[in-house]
Length: 308
Picture 1: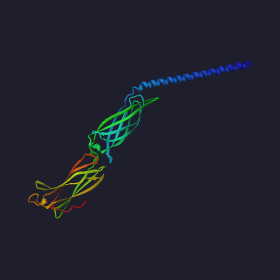
Picture 2: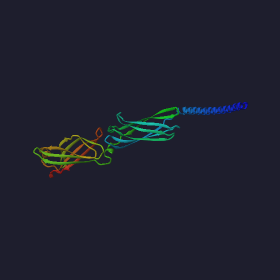
Picture 3: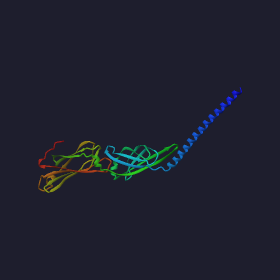
Picture 4: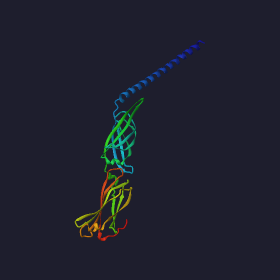
């Protein structure tokens, strides 16, 4: 009986020692973890306050005209000079003219930027036609970069502005394609005078509608070295759809007295000159492309021109 009691006491002492060892091991591990955590926290706190602002480089390229406006692409390059990874949700871009008109906006998806490396984020957008009325376009880009380590996070505001010169609208309207303009003429004898039917034919090679405006028809008689204006008439504005040819006709009556007697005793001129001056533009803009087209007709061979 005594032997049994002694064995139990010895066994309990062995278990107590094991429990004590386990307890001490747990305490040591917890101390290591807590100490490591505080060391990391101190390191993060020390370095997060010295966080450097990322460097931003922006590149833009105007691509083509659409019916909504001028399509462009933008590339935002972010260099992270820190030892921590940065997370960027998105950028917002606003395009403003030099007279403070908002002509476009877009969102650029963000991502991560590794420590001491660069990442590039791209997007496409549309700038309204009103932008062509300005000389300079100001692109304002804003976003937030977030650093999060353990329970600490810090947000950096990213912002940059850049000025972009508005490209020549003609480069995008016609895209190196010729705009075809023809003047067709028919002369018909009427009781009150000579009826001149002038046809103005235009082909629009662009992807956007073009407006013809401020158009004026003038008809002259050419006699040797003299030029006499016979009649002048304005033309109503008209629209030319993309990739479409239109024919606009105007009827102009010239009195016989003015036609035959405006150059003295010479009844018929050497030539009849038809001149059309005006502007072509995109709807919603003030920019115009001046045009001037001349056609000549031999009055000695008056005949109806075939319709084309």
